[in-house]
Image (tube, rainbow, N blue to C red; front, top):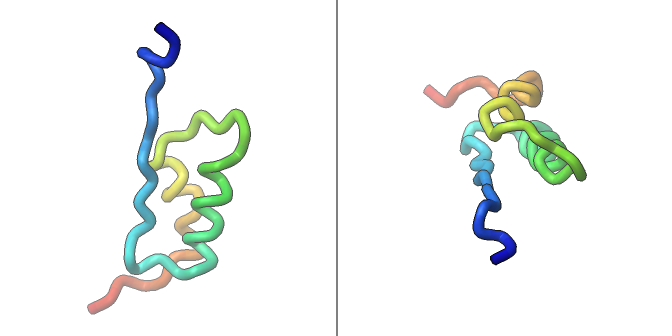
Length: 54
């Protein structure tokens, strides 16, 4: 049976992320051959994230 060992990850962009950080994270996530975990993608694109809401 094909596909019985497929793995999928869900990338959830934090609500405090800037539009630029969200776009960068999604763009990285959909790259062909991407093997990064969601956590790594968010760390890689954190530079564009806004300050936490207080």
